[in-house]
Length: 326
Image (cartoon, rainbow, N blue to C red; front, side, top):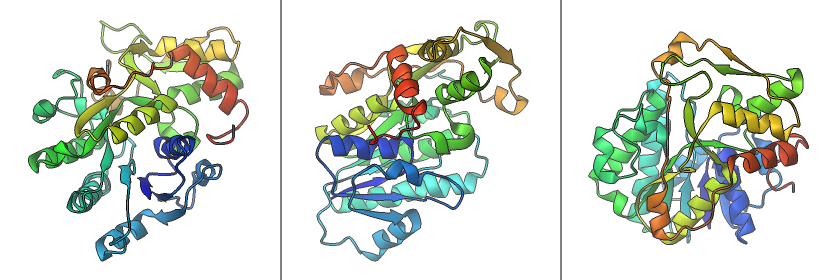
């Protein structure tokens, strides 16, 4: 049995989709579906054996309900992923403490565990973007979400757990099954929404002279590539911290240009003011080099940005399909 937490989310549901493609369906899916989202639609086309709500799973973990049951591995992707979340106590419990409890269980029972860290831990990049366990202490996240992920990376390192646990520092992941994310939907999906509705797209202005409007750079990665990387990392048995990204920073202008091209529309971008509350926490450049993952033997190419955006918009959003509906 595999356990996938965050199973109804963007990366979690794509992870189950990828496991299904590898012939694996003995999966316990864990998430919090809630009363106001349509996350359940991400699960509907997928094959898994059982589902538990997050707190029910947590209680069963503590009660010993899984004792004696063979667990092949845990892929822990459940977390609050909102970079704008300000409830620090909630983030500490949901993103740090929950992960620590699961890591303790897996370590004590010799269960392979891969978990989601984040490139948000790198902050403004002044200390680089190297996925090196020796440099974790120097990183300074710009928001509480990033710090909640940093807390666990540090906790695991201090206990020697990174010798067996593998942490994935996800970059800007986009793709099918993200409609439920509200304000945290990717710019790719927002582009599809705005372009199909109005024929144009709005982007934030730049407030740093070295970056022209729309030329802020991010490491964008298609979710299909992301889950292939996670599956490879899981199967490798390696411990440590690993970037999960494209390794190539691209501009917002190029990203949105790819969306216009995929929809066969002329490029029409306008630049708007960024809310002041975001300006001091905004990342102007990210680059998640994946040399460390490559050194393990991961040799699959990363889907080029234009091809990934076209696949997402033309084969999923335009057809209102989820992963597994193909």
